[in-house]
Length: 65
Length: 439
Image 1 (spheres, one colour):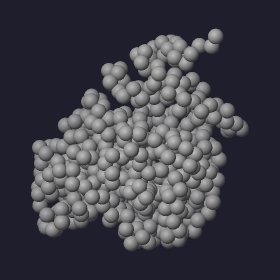
Image 2 (cartoon, each protein chain N blue to C red):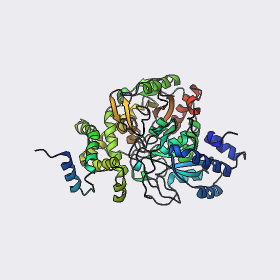
Image 3 (cartoon, rainbow over the protein chains, first blue to last red):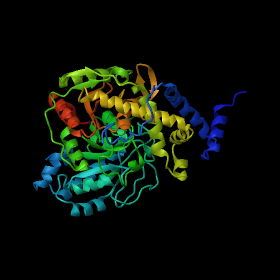
Image 4 (cartoon, rainbow over the protein chains, first blue to last red):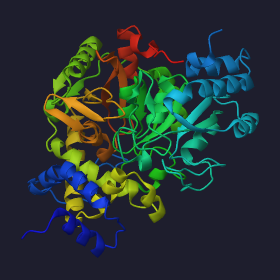
């Protein structure tokens, strides 16, 4: 039998040492329902050859000193 | 003479400078106005009559000499560290970088504005002080996270306020409240004493009722002049996908009509991977905004905010890496887009402000919690670091304002203000001078 979302979340939060109350788990499941689709799209996106560049300084345009 | 807070920021500054209005009187009537109107709006969470009087006595004769302003709860003051929308003082008691710039210009900080807790929401509904209300309909959201700042300016408690913007937190409430909201370029002023000091997304923002007042505030914050120029030849890029999709039909019509009225050259632009900006921005913003909150603060948060923090903390690191790859790509895409146009334009909010009791947007695709669609419209400017502005361009049949958003290249705040001034002139300043009926 597959674990429920609450069981998975409880395990993940416990493993990472993140404090939670039992009543948080139902809210967490709702948050996941709202945000999971967007993050799955991020996972599945093909970004081609684009490397993780070091030029992420938001104070200027990429490639400009 | 009309109430000073029904006058513009620049008029207040001029009246003080030429001796027509005593700054102590301006301070007193401003505090009275806040007392009169704040009960319905919950825009301001704390005022400082004593400290403001002392600050006024020391205020230099700068361009904002004696002018009362409010600041979001993300900026520390010498007598109050920021609380960031919680009940706890989380920041040091110092004049934060942006506040120093205001004080150097002679402004007087009279109060702190309400905000969404930890800045983690675009509606403002979660605040220990109650949700900031929209002055156009107090049962509707002012927005977030800088909702109190927008509501205070729209409700004419003050003529100018400072907010911040990590995922639209200045522009989104400005759009919903019918005021101008300018997100500054990333790191264009000192960040010490500001919650955004460790953020790669956050930038302070200026709220005012029109472009001239916003320019005055932005010049003080940036400590440099933003000379005005003719905007009539600026080219506007329109990225239909995704920013003009799934928009409330009246919002769509009003924003397109505003562009038509401005009569600027318009061209279609494509921003590849823009649809991934929303999740990439939301993931990074969630990690940055609440990541350092102490355990006691987290325990006292509204369940949804705590759930967001826990959800983000559970995400695998590979997702953040992917989000940063998207970010790198979007920054390049944006730079390429600005090679063919001077500005980008799309609706600030996909729909007008929802009720506080049910902060859900009615979109052509159906009902949706407000944060996702709002962040989709806003986050590109934060991921890239560019300045962006929301200007009021119309009124929805619900009686709530509609905002148009403009983005410009890094450091080009003046261009945004020129474009807003251009629209204001073309629309006979209609939306900049229309005020909600309060009190």
